[in-house]
Length: 345
Image (cartoon, rainbow, N blue to C red; front, side, top):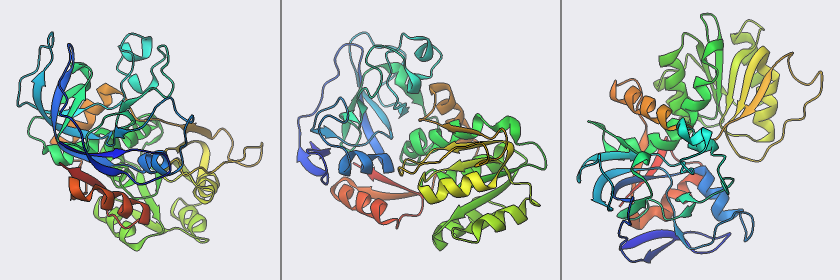
């Protein structure tokens, strides 16, 4: 079968012929409906070098996946061949305290830091078939379109985790700011609008993203630039935002986030553009909590899927056939996508 693989560091992916996998005992073979193309893939492809992660190349890209159960390894029960499923992508040890409550994104088992998962060190979903190591990583899709659901396993789950940790601050009269209305940000806007009474302010430098933010529920949309801080401050009557979610993570966006965060608020860095945020006593509002997040928990993915099934969350996806997976990443690098790119084997 054909697979889009990373075959070396600091280079493009490559469409290659690889053997079809067979599930071993305890594993599940999934026929892939779609695999999302993620900004984190770009960092792995073009910035990593040998030794930076405990993985080796080649491996098939695609850590954001959904499809149908194709075959069951011996000892697997509770699933049926042909069943539509979403793949929970953070594969932990399954035995530590974090994993036992479904937070495999924060697995504390032996060798957990940087351990390989499907699409990041192990073969992922940019191929017709992929092996999932345990049935616990598969969640039923019900009536959701697997192509759209694929994007929810990361582009939906990651912002949901970030939003959920701050929901207690989003009371009537509060404000939430989303910086970066891309594959994750456009879903964060919908979540904030659906799950809280907060006023949602979206920030982006692209006019297309500004239009998308308004279309999916932002109450205000602000063009990134020198005037953005004052405009957000005016929108909040000078108080600042109770929650700021930065889906870019560059120096400029982190500076904006710090400048508009309200005292006692949350500033959550989700994007990994490599920026830094200097902290000193007077550089940020009093008691503003700064946090990073990584992916989300398995129970939270079930909640994301339920939110989508209710019609209150919908991923904007742009489909690329497997033969054009390279084009999906090129569009992602160029910033020309509206929503999330998904590769459809």
